[in-house]
Image: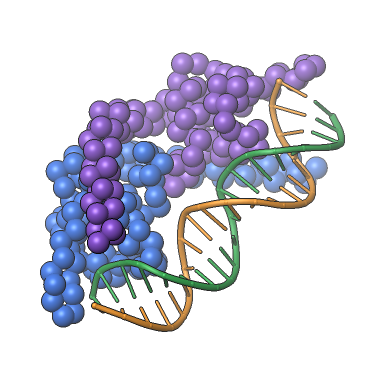
Length: 110
Length: 110
DNA sequence: CGGGATCCTCGAGGATACTG
DNA sequence: CAGTATCCTCGAGGATCCCG
């Protein structure tokens, strides 16, 4: 189930919906680098798992809004905690990576 | 960076090391379904990011122990929070999935 | 506009064999 | 025992076209 949450776009979508419902096109535009196929599939999975509701307005052109469910807002608590940890410790990780990489480079040269 | 943590085995390995250092073979045996290639690469990434230290005992046969760093133990806090959330809400998600799937099945049949 | 259907690429990740 | 190297598979995910 956790692997499912790590679906590359899922967390991002959940965070985007935290300020209120958004249309499909708004999500797509704001993410930018996602294909509509992946956005659709991400939203389907989130809907299936009960994190998001899908509301269709049958008009021309059609309009579809996505909104977090109670459970969707619920999961944001631990999700945000993790995201904040990542932000606070980004520098530490970067430093560790650089030092690791330079050590490896030296070792390979010899 | 978060995508990197979701490396399919990374979280599992971190949690396994939470009770103390383990040898490569112990990790591999306890996980069971991981190839040594993926375990090696997972451990390299964790080491590179500074979550884990690698201690080599040059003997025959060789012995390599992996241990969480302070940062590794640190990240476990938000990680555990998320894992616990997932456990507590597993049933809710399962229910949502089943209801979603049966609705889809009905819709497809017609 | 939202999204299904199709085709295609590319890299994560498994299996196996070899080495210090 | 702990890796590295090699080969190979398979599915995530992108691009494109079409439809209500």
